[in-house]
Image 1 (cartoon, rainbow, N blue to C red):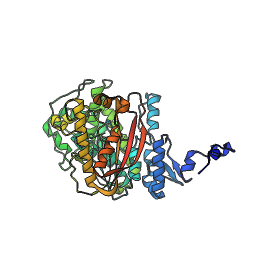
Image 2 (image 1 turned 30 degrees about the vertical axis):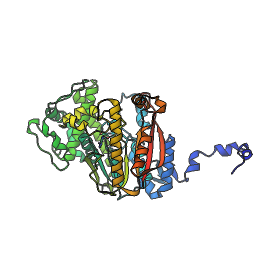
Image 3 (image 1 turned 90 degrees about the horizontal axis):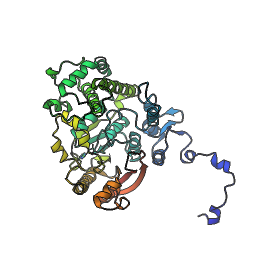
Image 4 (image 1 turned 135 degrees about the vertical axis):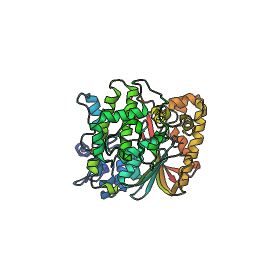
Length: 462
Ligand SMILES: C[S@@+](CC[C@H](N)C(=O)[O-])C[C@H]1O[C@@H](n2cnc3c(N)ncnc32)[C@H](O)[C@@H]1O
């Protein structure tokens, strides 16, 4: 150990110290990091990747490296090029936003549909690596939301299962998974005939009141059938025709997701007519699918099986010790009412929202205090299910933040004195045999966000 005197000794050659960056101290010279890696947690994950993956694994599945020697990584290739085709008049602020997030969020089919509370896909890729998952093994996201884990795992050759209580999440996840390989010529034909495609879906579902948050109950009940994986397309005579090839389930669901996405925008804004909004979104969806399919051309057989299910994380339809890793983000307590956000889409798909609310963690109960108590009971049940299905020795990672202000109000204490949701989950996990091995912090920036820190909590099944 250095004596105090030695520690305080002045550095003699300051130029020597300054000429070496922190990256050179952490990584071997042949590993080049992706651009825009600028947060401490990212550097930590990159470090773990470099420690746990062989060079060929970094090329195939690494999240934070652009190059290994002379070879570009697949992540770099997937993310390269224009992140999104922005209209010419877009502000430089918007452009810079997309450029900054090019390697973090704006790649593959992750950008389809703006689901709130989505994961950072690049971080998910790194976590899947760091948790030790290898191609052929199976990862579970019991609260998959928009399916970030399943999409990343599929690209990485790792099998995945996801559940979400919301049937809309299952539909959205399946459509985003399928978009990796959806046949593109019928989609191009749909874009050429966008007016009649728009009219088709409008006749089926009505169109939202522009800028008005429509809450129509007048939808045909059988729309739900488009979400059943094995129920093929059913022609709906009242609604006219779609271009040839659009009846195939993958294409149909791709177009439907674009329609629902545009309906959501139209509810929030009346800058464009619903039709113009639909056309713009379909154009963007096609751009996204074309871009990822160009990179994947020839590598489709390497995509792994992914199974999104409608289900309850408190009662998983899985065998004991059948899963090699779990990665999820629970509802952020009561900050986001997912059903309120998705009410148009859920209504459109024929879901009984009242029934669904009873299954949703964080939404059950009347007053906030009661909701919080039920949240604890439900999360304890969900963690006990995680422990049951996870193989001993493997890792369950939870990404979670705490809204201290909100919790402080509920508990009647100062925001500084509340127990964070991260700490609560660590405590509940340990009661079910899941033991903390590492906790990382991720700072959340942005004026509008009341949550300042998100935690990545890694628990090992004893
Ligand atoms: C924070 S979001 C997950 C977002 C996801 N990580 C993504 O990348 O899109 C939490 C999800 O938990 C789901 N959820 C709530 N209660 C559930 C339950 N009982 N079982 C399964 N999922 C549930 C919600 O529908 C929501 O999609």
